[in-house]
Length: 300
Image 1 (tube, rainbow, N blue to C red):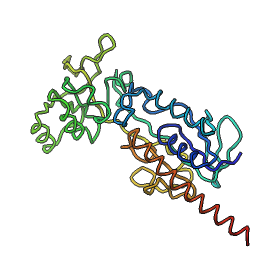
Image 2: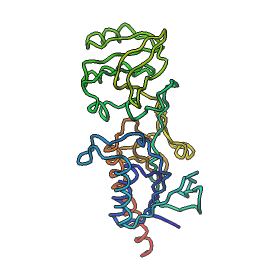
Image 3: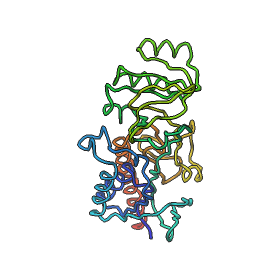
Image 4: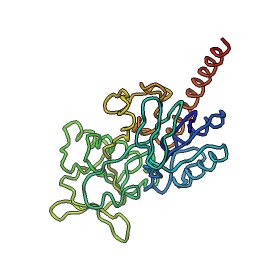
């Protein structure tokens, strides 16, 4: 089977690319494993007209729209992109494409502390712009397990005056300590032992020596790892650990675009959707010009 475009990944970026391409009368397939990064979250935030919708509901509505335009929605895992744009999948025959969009997202590597994985996306959070409004003015903590944790805390002070910073095993520098103090963010020393949960609600953080502090939500900045094996196997150029793309999402590999978190750790759902739209415009334009060149050649 040959498609104009095969989209790998069915999140907001991939689905929006497929939508614009389908409306451009392109033959499109979307392959997805149904494992979105934001599955643990109850709501999508900051998306105009969709603020507060459940992630599964948003994706379900998107898939229904695509089905109405004749897009082939295939529940399968892509194992390899072969040069020449052959898409090898786990559960069926390879697909051939004129162009490919990779929207495989990223994975969050969380600190190895008791309670963190279980509360992830509920009251153990990471993105201030996604989650802080819902816990505004409550007792919050920032877990200092990453180089960007102090900056994380300085951002979160915007949403709550009752905020503590837990350096854990990463001592703060003199400059960081001055910044935290200037914003009245208390620094509580000591290694974190676990997240305290009572009746399925986060109630605090336990520290070494039997100490604990009362909190209602904890923010942590995870290590974000792109799911970019398909792209790197093709030799896509990278910079600082992330595949490089132009403003439309085009990679260094001919015919291959990448959108959303697979190339941009900062992309929220609404951003990824916009990335998908921009990629679709560029892909359709390129296909049009290819079709024109072929038609001219055929006419001799």
